[in-house]
Length: 277
Image 1 (cartoon, helix red, strand yellow):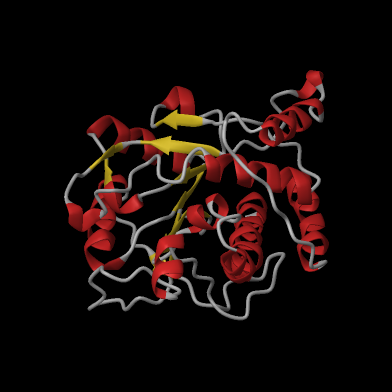
Image 2 (cartoon, one colour):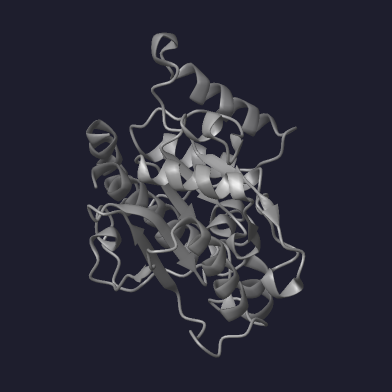
C-alpha cells in the first residue's frame, strides 16, 4: 500500500502539467479496445493480482423517486469505470486492471478488493446479510467511497442504511483543512461535480430539483472511522464524481471546469489517503 501511495504521487505532475485528455468510449470503439489492451500488456503475468482494481458495488435500490429512482448502483457505468481506470493508468505509475469489475456485497467478492466504489448511494438498500458482510469488510481494513446522491431525502435514506452497518458510529463531516483534500492535489475549496445535464442545462455546479432545506446544495464530505480513527468510509454528498469521469468528452467546458481539476485529482487524493491511513 505504501508503494501504491508513492506511485500515485506521480499523478500530481501529470495533471498540473496542463495536458488535455480526450478519448471516446463504447465497447465497439477501437480506441477503447486499444486502451484496454495497453493496460493488459503493462501487467506482469507473474503479478496479475498485484494491480489496482476499480471495483463497483452492486446492491438493491429503493424505487422511490425521492431517492433518485433513475440512478442506481450502475449509474455512469461502464463509461465512468473504464475512463477512470485508463486515466489512472495514464497519469500515474499504477498498474490497473482493465475492464469492468462489478462485485456483490459478499465476503467472497469483497475480500479481493481493498477499495470499493458505490454510485447512486441515495438509493442504497441492504439486506441483513449484506449489513453484516459490509461491516466485517470495513472493520477488517476495507475502504468504501460513496458517491452520486443529492439533497436531504437521499442523505437521510443513505444515513439510515449505514446506521444498520454501524449503529454506534456517526459520520463526521470533513472540513477543507482535512488532509484528504491536500494529500497529493491541494484543493482551495471543497470539490463539487454536478451531473453533466445539470451543468449543460442550467449552468449550475450542483443538481437542482432536490430538497436542500437542511444541508443546502453545497458539497458535504463525511467520514466513518473505526476505533483507531482509520477512515473506513468516505461519503461524497451533493456530488457526482461518476459523471465527471463518464462525461469528460461531452463538453469542453465541463471537462475544463470539473473533470480535469476536480474529478480525477480528488480521486487520486482519496486513493492516496486510503492507502496511507
